[in-house]
Length: 407
Image (cartoon, rainbow, N blue to C red; front, top):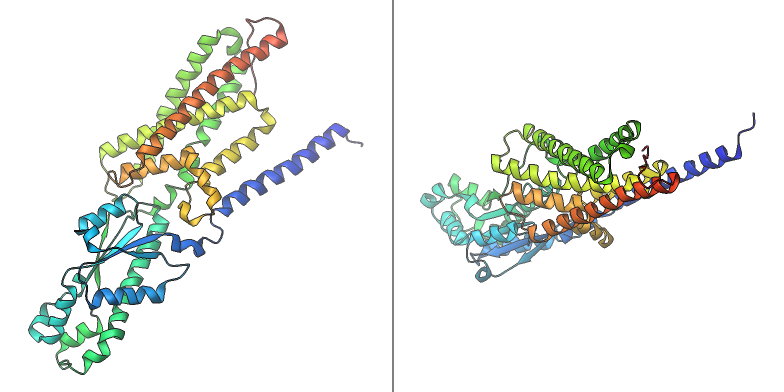
């Protein structure tokens, strides 16, 4: 049996194009994390020394040992720039730093007094020496990296203190007192402040598979809507204005419910995550906006792109959006900062702002970008409806006949 040349050409072309499609998209996706362990140093930590004593020196000595491409960069700032711990937290909250560690006032003198006096040693708390801050809601996987790095730095400060002062102090101290001996063994520890504790099991989904769900339901609904419209000849029956009104109304209703469902399952599986009803409402609204603009984009694409090429567009659009939210841009090659212009990235930034009560202040950028996408996609949607009509008019010769495209 001899196969037609058209069949062989079509199958061969599809074979090659689909392989290239997945190769290009997965190469783009994998590229976001390529050598990211060598870029950890791009994540900045703030260090402030309110004590100006041996403990601060120990922290700096520890960092000098830890400093490498796979450890966050510790940036020291004078205490005059951060008069209080709340100023440090605000700096982390605003995104100037991924975390911060500071030496509490009089930490070194308290430690010295405890080592010199059995009575003082009995009440000494080593956790009052250092404090560190991070935001557990901001890219949860990488927030764990920040938290672990700060803990390692605290442990290094303990070892650094013993290296700098411990051996010399041992010969002068009353080592028969168990409290003094214990302090010398464990002189430095820390308290921590997680700005938004995020420990629920699904936290790793928020910036990954969840972003796919902002796009995929719109694609499925648009496919169904176009197919049903073709079967029932809605394009021929209704005028352009009625078709636009009908499809616009359906898009609003569908994305309204889809965004409610998405917000609902985020809340249903939040476990003991501290969130409020107002945060739920804001989450629902911003997801609704992004789902609606994605409906416009996909509906416009179905009018302009032949059905056999739609998978190429949808897969590429999904990969571009998801890859923009997988990891911080600091850990990806500079090219990936194109993601600033992608709706999913700005959606995630707004969600972080909502979930942390304003502790990710990017609304000045994110909301204008999202509304710009909505306006542009709305114009594209209207142009797509007009294109459908012009296409039918050209084929039928009747300007009142409306085309239906099966997608």
